[in-house]
Amino acid sequence: MADVKKVAFITGGNRGIGLQTARELGQGGFEVIIGVRDPKKGEAALTELRAAGVKAEVVLYDASRPETDQTVKSYFESRYGKLDVLVNNAGMIREELLAKNASNVPGDILRETFETNLFAVVRLTQTLLPLLKKSPAGRIVNVSSILGSLGLHSADDSPIAPAKAFAYNASKAALNAFTVHLADELKGTHVKVNSAHPGWVKTELGGPHAPMELADSARTSVRLATLAADGPSGGFFHENDRLPW
Ligand SMILES: NC(=O)c1ccc[n+]([C@@H]2O[C@H](COP(=O)([O-])OP(=O)(O)OC[C@H]3O[C@@H](n4cnc5c(N)ncnc54)[C@H](OP(=O)(O)O)[C@@H]3O)[C@@H](O)[C@H]2O)c1
Image (cartoon, rainbow, N blue to C red; front, top):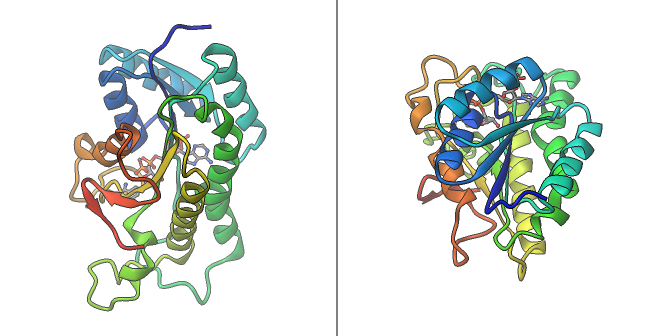
């Protein structure tokens, strides 16, 4: 079994915020494993990470193929016997941000969005939890979105109020509920779980008009992945700020 200090798994780690998170955790001393569904994209990301001096590997993970959860579990079990950090970063949106579509969102969009952004995250986290409990400081980061905040959506004067894409927003609100419920169950263990809003970032998902650059996008996930023992659990954060549920 490899003699390793800290090991992190990042889903959707081949591009965007996931790749930036892998780069920064790697540069901070973690051995990083990125979960990817396309091996070619995985190889390209590995080349980039290794060029940045990061010790990295790739494992097949596809949120729409539940059997890949076991692939991931077996990988960490056999190589490390533990997992220190799980960043549930993979996510998708199939709607326009301003869709205002609660009354007519097609069922297939609702199902696919919940499958990727919620059900797959719950399944993978449940599968990997025994390995996270073997870490002296297990950290789970659920990459959510400020668009999952019911408090902000129900305030007419909130800057996010116009961004009503029902399937995406509801999937992130439900992901936040998972954070709260799991954190409660994990009280008294060494495992912390928090939700992260990375900011509105220029990625394929965020689009070209987003104000935040990719280079700044991993701050929240990295902070929550590296919380000290007295850090929070069961919270929703953007950088150092707590967000309303
Ligand atoms: N960008 C923003 O402004 C913003 C704001 C708030 C929250 N977020 C959240 O941040 C996270 C990362 O977003 P991003 O902006 O970096 O998006 P992105 O550039 O579109 O990257 C998404 C990543 O998720 C992977 N992915 C998508 N569906 C998957 C599936 N079914 N199985 C496995 N992997 C899958 C993609 O893999 P492929 O390359 O194979 O497609 C890709 O690696 C998401 O959870 C998103 O909701 C983003």
